[in-house]
Length: 186
Image (tube, rainbow, N blue to C red; front, top):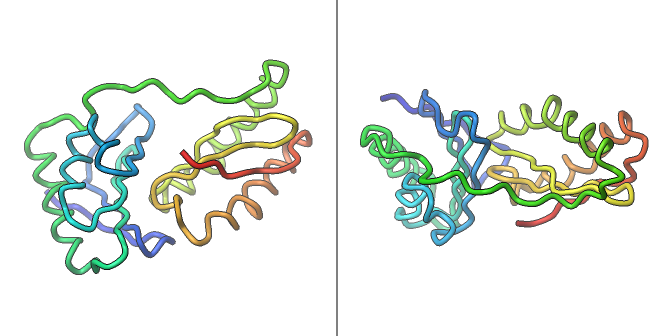
């Protein structure tokens, strides 16, 4: 098994491409600590490596964020080994399909929210996935779009600029009702 490694815009995060399906059509999964990883044998295995601070599972990639201190030269081989062991073991990536988080949308704005989600899915998420992350729609009220950054994008120094100058500008252009974009935490 050959696993490619790619840098991301976030220097604390690396993207690992195992050359096979990770999450497939089940969306993404973001694990911010070992306790949150209980439903993923892969994430649990990665959190056993000292220095792993966050694990994000995408369609065909895994992004790992390191804590301050350890260097990638030490962590990278351990992470590669853990990912390889997991896929060779035949264990599932997730033990269950957890329910999606609720979105905060005024029912009167359902059509606008659908438009926003379509733009995010077609124009933003593919680019963000290329950098090892995801952007998740969390709500729309009073002209304000609420989004959550995941994976390499969570905690990335340039994520706020991406939201304000890239995503907000694009959404305001295509959906005149949008006034602003705000980042929300988990």
